[in-house]
Image 1 (cartoon, rainbow, N blue to C red):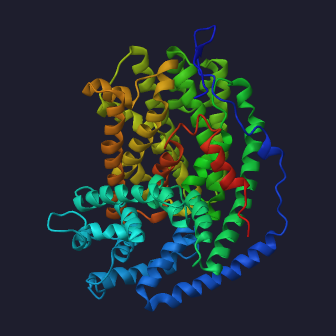
Image 2: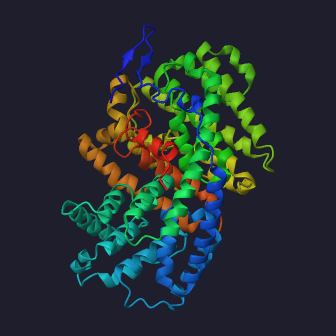
Image 3: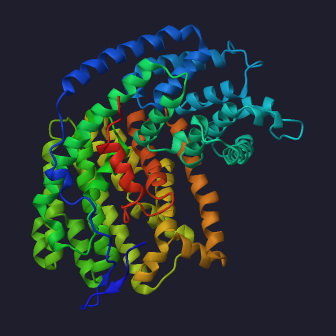
Length: 553
């Protein structure tokens, strides 16, 4: 990591964060918008062709499952939500009525149906995999010869919930054998697909990023469907034009505030914050939502650096008081740099309130403000621990740390851009702290801490999940990280999936997916490095892939 900690002359900590690598690129660039009309017209034609294909394969269950999987992986499912739901409703009904014959079905078919149904939030038993095990309960070695089936089973394992031991065994079995396949591979199209899945399984991957990768992979498949591939490319490129326009407007807003001129100690990551918004929802109808989320993520990032890095404890006491009151009269008692931030925070929320006034949800902005207050409150708890040199237990730490991971803030903020879909019941659900939100926060906190804790401890920071675990259980760093990933993070994912299935009657898909996609973003940004703080690596490639480089048609 290129950041080096230091102390300013006034005794404040300084991280010397890597600079903003984009500068004014998205502000000054004029992205080509020519030929968009032709592309959209072609896209509509291709979409109708794909719709016909989806409907015509209704009498061929396996063919339809494969086609639905392709549509989802290529990032096209949002065009066919109704058709996919109707198709999977029939699959589930036939499965429950045992119209589908399981006896002769191979591992690929069983795994694919299981995953697609559970992704659709149906309650389906994992006992269907028992027939692929021997008398000792282990998976039959003959399965290793079916690489496609192994990969399908591996993907299904990532939908496992608590107590599903057969899927735990399947995960270990498939992971070991797929890695062996890669080690002996010749680097073909199927091997690339396996390598990507081992790092980012489909259910846990950032949707648009996974689609970009799969489009390239699918093109190499000699049996690919040309119409489907063409539609996927057109759709991806059309949305990319929209993202460029959004990022241009957001960059202008960011430039006009000039916050980095006065808050130079903080991370300048407007573009990376937009990628977080894009990760929460990518569909064109959420354009306003992405703008709102980006603004709040930018301001939350600065607040994080104020608490973690720059402010004195006495200043933070003034700051938290001002945040709790949420009143511009509080600005008078704040230090100059906090005045700048506080003004930007209040004015941004006022602007958001105006933007969403067209929706019939006057309650929404209240929940958003309360979430921001909660965020500041928990940042203060961590600042107090640091001042007192207190190392909490891992349980105590995560009660606060899962909030400072920001997902309890970003979830209700994402609802603001959903219009009337985000009912008062949706906000009350997220305020009830469902186990899926807790799980997403735990994943975000632990994965962030694992890749950033060394640097943060060098500059001076509250104990991370790694230090808390090491001290509580008297173990070395390597063991602490393994335990945190294999137990805490794995269990958090199971909680998310359980809530995902159990809440189907009460929580709409669009609402739940904001929580699910936040957990997926942790897997994207914090897999191998702190891709938010140090963005001149994998994160830069992600930005280029999602926003800048179109797919050749």
